[in-house]
Length: 409
Ligand code: HEM
Image (cartoon, rainbow, N blue to C red; front, side, top):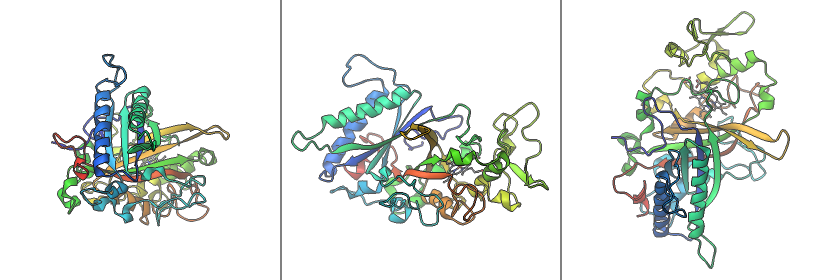
């Protein structure tokens, strides 16, 4: 039986619900393992009640919980809480963490990566002790869970110091798009892992866990909030966009060549007669792009993000990851008044998989999104990071008050 926490929609036919929030919780530096354990127990109990429609201040008046699901993650700092009983697992060691933004803003996310922090980002809020992923079918169900969490933590503040053991230090929200496309207009999530391969990629096995045996059956969450510069994207003609992504923009068909004029050529026969999009039934063989020899196609995002094709995804060297991203749209004071992007959420048996995809040459290393590397590359400044972090998602244990309770309890 799977011991993965709820909120990882890896099973056959399962799709993530429409709404998402990732909440970062900071532990008071004065709080010890005993206090953190108590706080996490009450957070978990409150959210479990809420998932069953019970709101503390509305006794006897249940609400529609909207299929709320909750996942608890432990960041590297969780293991520094005084009195923590277990050491930081190898999957969260410093080489597998993102760099901090520069104090003046921006700076590289990782040595070897072409993904920078956005110039206005001076602090990364995805580095707190804990994260809570909240997913539900309605925006209300997710937002209410954040507010109920805040109420609970507020009630726990020390009357003299006003400090609580846990405080909300950041929240990022997102949603699924019914049209299955990303903000750049292309289909996204088309060549995600097949459901039968997912658990092997996601769940930490004994060999992955090494000495951290207590993590077996859990997973690692890698989060990146990535803004897309749509102004820049729309300076590129459709053919240039397609060469950067590696798919036809309208149908989603993988590209298999370029013609004499350098224009992209989609896979012949895709989509099959009677369908208009690669995601429709009958097009299964086209979902994952076949290997290409044309250098401009090999440099596209889909080929850089997966160089191992169909090789056993369970092998760490395949660098396959279960992607469960959520788009975002947020308002900003400056014109045009909004910013869009992707909450990249990847689940895997070690963050090493995603970090190597982002840094290895030939993969996404040294490039921002895709295309040939180097100054003047057409997608050089397309993506910028607003927050990023890696979290251990401990396995569920029967009778444990919350996943990972053995760290503090
Ligand atoms: C805002 C940022 C991003 C956008 C807009 C984006 C967009 C896309 C699109 C349109 C596709 C093609 C559809 C598909 O095959 O699923 C794709 C595929 C993919 N992307 Fe991204 N992506 C982004 C960031 C990333 C990052 C940061 C990673 C890895 C760390 C990544 C990994 C992948 C993978 C593994 C595939 C599938 C490749 C394959 O197996 O064919 N993407 N992405």
